[in-house]
Image 1 (spheres, one colour):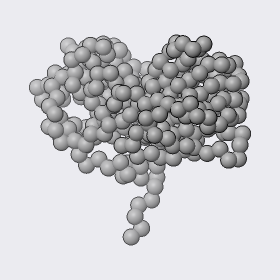
Image 2 (tube, rainbow, N blue to C red):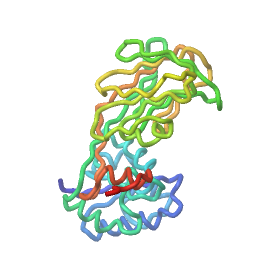
Image 3 (cartoon, rainbow, N blue to C red):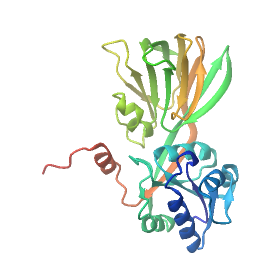
Image 4 (cartoon, rainbow, N blue to C red):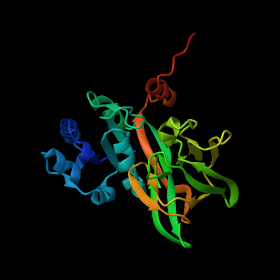
Length: 290
């Protein structure tokens, strides 16, 4: 696949220190004879020196590749906004862990050039779609690349909810909340809550209760072709969040439906990318003993 029109996206709220990387990236892409465009909010935040600035909507219409400068949260935010356009994404890491953004801010040129020349490893990541239903009507929809979380807005406050799987009763539970994660999100909040790591190529969802008032309730991994329905039985102080970036209040009696979205996010990595090597490095796993 050949790339000609490249979007450059940062995170304006956390742009401190990123401006040099973004400007260097823009100049490098222009030196290769490519069309480079900086997302408009990012351009304003860094006082961008160049003639290519566009809104996210304009970038989605003309670009065939997006390079995101920031951490995993920046990649997730950009991916969610570009999901409908099916634009591949590369991440230059200016954050901490960097599960999704694995090019170095100090030496991104050589691996980026290899990717631009068609030498890359492509990962296809599934998204979740959430629908909030009130009195039988869908009143809000959103998508998540990492996870959908139902929780209380009050610290250390349990909620009661019922979970159905394709209409079949699973459990009613008192807990601090529930995490429904994709394979991508299995190494994020889900992992912190004791959930399993799921290989990224699987189309699956993981349900991980948060501090359940039960000695036997454990995470469940289910196939992505099905629908999870959650009904809030008790509590007036609840919210549902998508990737920790989109938050919506929910009330007693509201129903939430979560299922795999048709949108697929394509993340491009250097050709030498190894998912398990990334896990070893980021999570501090030991190497081979022999």
